[in-house]
Image (cartoon, rainbow, N blue to C red; front, top):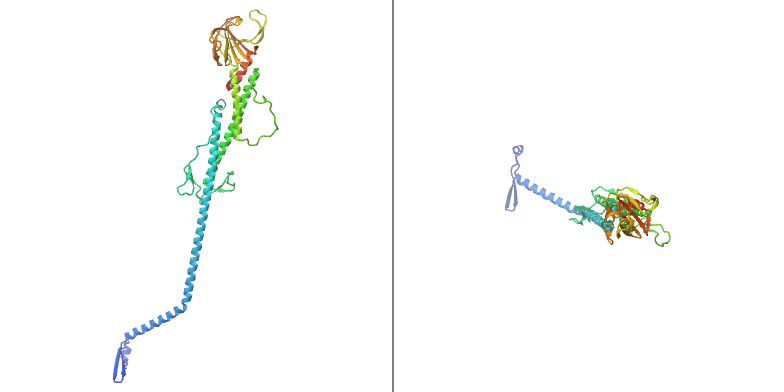
Length: 423
């Protein structure tokens, strides 16, 4: 084996090493260069390191696998818990949406039912209100607006009422307290903007209901008061009218009325009041309560007076009105002409039967415009003023007789002035 020289070592260089292998007569040798020795050493080192690493991996593999599996199990459990929580939240939101939608549907159904009931009430009022024109004039009974269009929205999560989607969800919507209870909703329930809309609709319908009942009560009261006024005026003139109360034998236990009388009962009461008023109006239009010569002065009253011809006390069976010759004489009430012609001291006279034992006479006419059997209404022209018969000058002698007995016509005319605005 050849050794390196000192100079070569000093210069850091190594010459190739020759390896001689002798076996008997067979001699072999190998030349090993430095770089080849370095490669071989490196390969051996890597192989040793790999062997040691493999050995360590095999020794620690069970711990690594267990740690990895535990981590995967934890991750899987976390994902499953998250998925379960999300699923529970979705179910809760879905259930709440369904409950909200059902609540909205129930409230809408109640509001529609009440609206339809108000419309039915108005239908009941129509035939009654047609008879109240003389009482209420231009007043009207409040009527609810037409039934709204209610349908499910495109997403199926709510209701659409007059173009407004409601009942979808509560999240992100400011809530408020219901100021008063609605059927099916507790006063402490939190509500959304959609619920506030229902509260407003409920308030509107309640206002309409209250106003309808109040207006019906007002109409009934006005009808009773008007009927009472007409009855009092006719009674003061001595005209008997059928009394709507106490005319029959009635009785029964005294029971206090209910605190909240039903709407139908109030309508029935209004109908009875209007019937009573209609009867009194028909009576008032039939009896002679108008003035035969509106605006004319009375020259001689009813009762004891000095006779204008004999100049001595005498009973005057009527009232004399100053009238120029030819002035129109008009009927003071509806009736049938029973006399139209000359009648002794009355001169040309028209007599009308108004029914109920009441007749009127229009005397001293210069011309008669009606004949016996004619049907006349109040205000119809009967003739023209004159001075026929026992008379000292043009005027109208007007009489009212009840069952053949002359009564003071001024009481009838005064009664007519009190109730003319109601007729």
